Image (cartoon, helix red, strand yellow):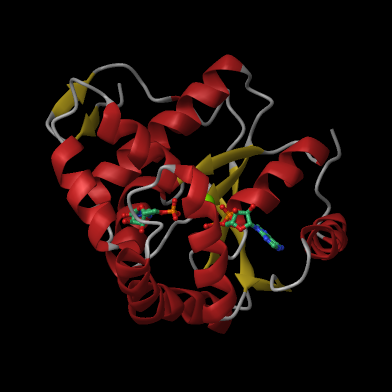
Length: 223
Ligand code: ADP
Ligand code: C5P
Ligand code: MG
């Protein structure tokens, strides 16, 4: 029997993601772009139209930060405020759990938009270590948007989001992290011909029209 090791937790139950004979191997699209590029907005629209599940690494981390029993809450909180990338051991377990729960509830749900991941080399290595062979990365959906537009959108979002990182100080750090750590990951996938770029600086519906063209070409199934 497959023994799954999750951090310090050792489970004897075979993971949904490892029961390959009975479950479909999930297809994954990594969704990347600067803070405020519109990843979440576009993913919400995608799941309304296509048979896909949206998992935002940032949302999962924020949820975990608020979970009373979490041992990682304080660390996550500090990393988010500093615009730094949380160690992947935390993030990959949240992502894997969310994927497993989705597929356990409905085994036909095997297409995932993983938003805001992988954001640096550590994220990428963690994914490879844990998910290689268990999920297929189809491509990276890259929302390309200039820094000024990104910052202004986040500041605007900050008026109502309640997020601790939608302020100018955190944003400067987030943009730096994006440029230093995330752009090289996008470039790495570009070299493999796996990046699909959309100009995200335009109005939401124009961006989505391009997204739809792209997903239709990729053979994504409509709801
Ligand atoms: P991300 O998930 O990439 O950080 P969001 O989808 O949360 O970005 O969008 C950031 C903010 O910008 C939100 O307030 C959202 O409503 C707004 N927004 C998203 N896309 C656009 C767009 N194409 N044009 C103008 N505002 C947008
Ligand atoms: O994608 P989002 O803007 O919601 O991410 C917010 C923050 O969550 C990031 O700035 C980072 O601190 C944290 N995060 C992370 N690792 C990821 C995704 C998000 O540490 N893969
Ligand atoms: Mg987001």
